[in-house]
Length: 190
Ligand SMILES: Cc1cc2nc3c(=O)[nH]c(=O)nc-3n(C[C@H](O)[C@H](O)[C@H](O)COP(=O)(O)O)c2cc1C
Image (cartoon, rainbow, N blue to C red; front, side):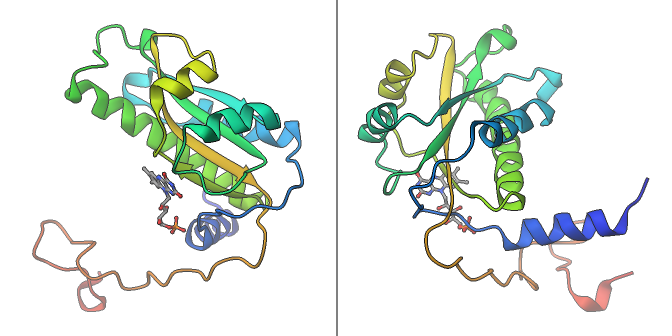
């Protein structure tokens, strides 16, 4: 079923989303955090494995503990979603083999993207963070040994005015028709 207004709304959310690194102190409601976390369940995953797990952090003391090991988090977000790979969902994959981690990293990336889009549509700011010490965050959050915490997503109400929407209307060298070399431009649109 095609729905022009839905497609338009999704394109608008995708194109205006920017990361938020400065938040108001207002808490995010648990229900909203759960809605964000739940998007992970709907995300595509390699082989339909659904290996992504989410730990929600919103208590201040626990937030301080995570932040202590996360140089990539700027300031004090009201909440965090920690996306982990549960390797028990993929017993034939090995967490130490790059060929296997690539697939699960794409799974986490797809899940992250869904969280960012819904947050934007809900009027919340968010920022994915990979600069953190995995072993320490694992300990702080009691993450089981066979999970790997991979991405933190900070969440909250943006302080200050939103950053300008980036202009990405004609990204030279990003898109091609059929093969690299035939650059996309207005002239070769069918
Ligand atoms: C895989 C990944 C890791 C990132 N890690 C961090 C991080 O550790 N700290 C941070 O402040 N932003 C981080 N970011 C956010 C990027 O810096 C941001 O998306 C980029 O500068 C583009 O800005 P925009 O999302 O507002 O368009 C990360 C983004 C991605 C996709």
